[in-house]
Length: 145
View (cartoon, rainbow, N blue to C red):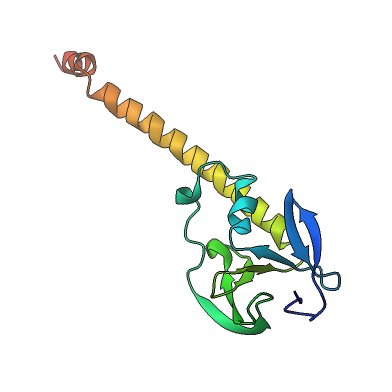
């Protein structure tokens, strides 16, 4: 397989516990279709449902898929300030140098925000349940007597 940017042979490497193919020249990497989810799962434990939409909008590039030579599509990763490219035939994703680390940082941040949200919702639910209890209404009624 050839690098879609430099057109040199991609070489096997391990990045964040995943076997990937990297370009020795530009340091970009090719992730197979399912490997992006595996990368995200290194730091995000809530499952795919909570990750959000991966691709909102994309535009064709002049870069070619290393597997099928289709034109790669550039998109803004999960609506964050991070760009990557994907094969429209679902072969994989092209990430520029260090974008895999950026994905991990974004997913870790997203997990923290989601965890805070779920805790807040749980606490709010408990408060509402308490406010609906007969003892709460009795105390509230007693305040106005």
